[in-house]
Length: 243
Ligand code: PGA
Image 1 (cartoon, rainbow, N blue to C red):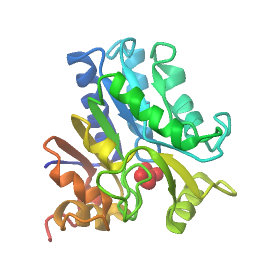
Image 2: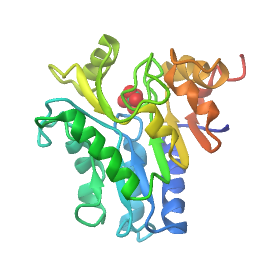
Image 3: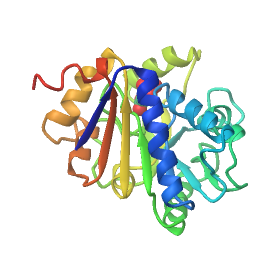
Image 4: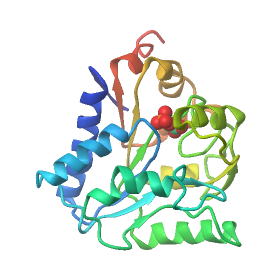
């Protein structure tokens, strides 16, 4: 695995944005897999800056986000639809209809999840998938125990995930279910870039990338993928050499 360690959050966010910009430069109609959460916020800010400076052009690109809470209206400030608009989509030039976030509302979420898979396939598959990592090793909302061949589906969130996310977003309440791309969906991406920062992530980063491949630590399966870049700040990389 290609593990790159940067001095601080700003440096790692710049490096991650550069990788996305390079991807789009080499293939303007790239299909990007995008992630929400506090980790990629700096990367999105950097991409917006690069767009304003004329250094990246999203006009031919397509995006598919990893996940959304069940029952969450896209206009809800807690929704990942809203997160993506505020952090990226409202500020850059994706063509109308080219950005996708799973819907958490509707009469048949299972069918909608399967349709999301079909849309990814119809777009040609994901060229570059961005991931964060949860404190329990989840990628997307694939919690420990998620089968490695799972597809986009409705998932139950662990109590830890809900409480960590509530704290981070200062939301009074959050749904306990989500629609998430599956492990199999993520693994089919041609290239994957996982970001993690902060000392709090050091232990899970080390378990995921230096420990055994196990569904107990979902991100560990990335060790099997041939093209993964892991972008860390120094505190998150702290335990990597000691195992
Ligand atoms: P975070 O979330 O970026 O807010 O730490 C990562 C995740 O839960 O996947």
